[in-house]
Image (cartoon, rainbow, N blue to C red; front, side, top):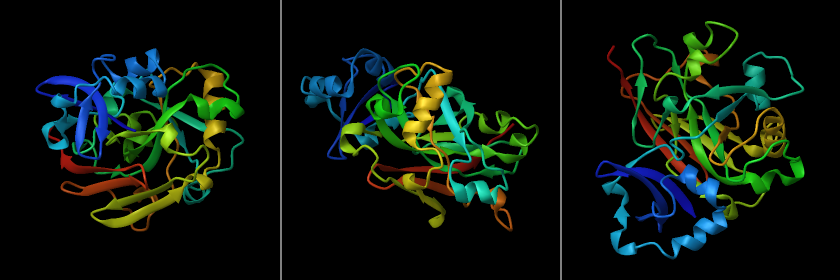
Length: 283
């Protein structure tokens, strides 16, 4: 099942994409996907899908997509989680995952413009695989971690590099408004075998700039869920962004940053393709 969040006629809602053509509104279950996940698991949502009024289904071109989860309590990103990326960044090995937060205002949606702020020319791409928490919990054991996942989606953890490197903390460069694209939809966990290798590709103006897969993660998805949930209670709708492969623009020679008019794609094979344009933002 593919689940997305959207706006139609000024009203935000969420629904299921059927046959990659029509969007069946599920707002009658709960006001938002986050609320629905808090109230029911994916099986419960799938059951309620049968009650949806398909006479009011919409085409994709009739809606404006929102980030898959527009209002998560937490967006937890993982840094340096691919060995080749760690090496290109010249960072030491660590025994534990590197965590940093994004805030919901930093998110953007498939098809929307990613702003290149006037304060910088160092807007970098970071294709990643995001997972959405369906069942919350604290100190989740690795063996139980898969059961807490609602689904998977592409994510572009686009970064304002000069602001990221203002200090040893990365928060500023990772939280410019609208830079973190998330979508176009979430594919639910029941469509993806637990532990299945997911392939990730990033393309800039049609040219491949990154490729990686979940077998290459230094810290696996169960390890990440266990570690993060030891620190904080994971809630339904929380988002974990699992890390980017090698090939980021700041580590290339010469460096490669996104510029006004560029088209950036992040595709997770079999899940979906996230596409955005970069547009210079006026001060």
